[in-house]
Length: 70
Image (cartoon, rainbow, N blue to C red; front, side, top):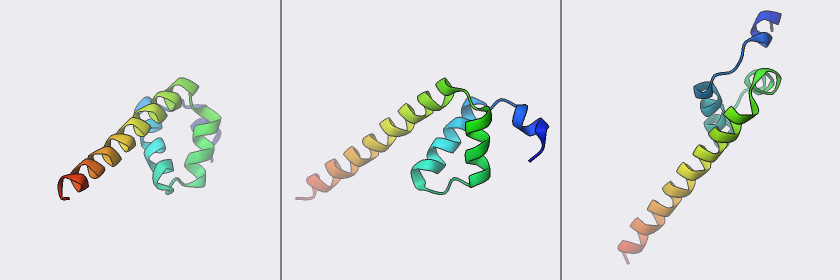
């Protein structure tokens, strides 16, 4: 990895994409290293909160949908 790419800041959308990839377990090692070396804490914190809320909402909707069938 070049030194220039290490100095670039990770945007919020990139942090959000990384959080989704981490949730699914498909995050590459290169992206993980990039995130830890040049990411901002608050970007990843907020991305984690958003991903968690969306995940719990999706699980809740699936449960509600399944309960309607019984």
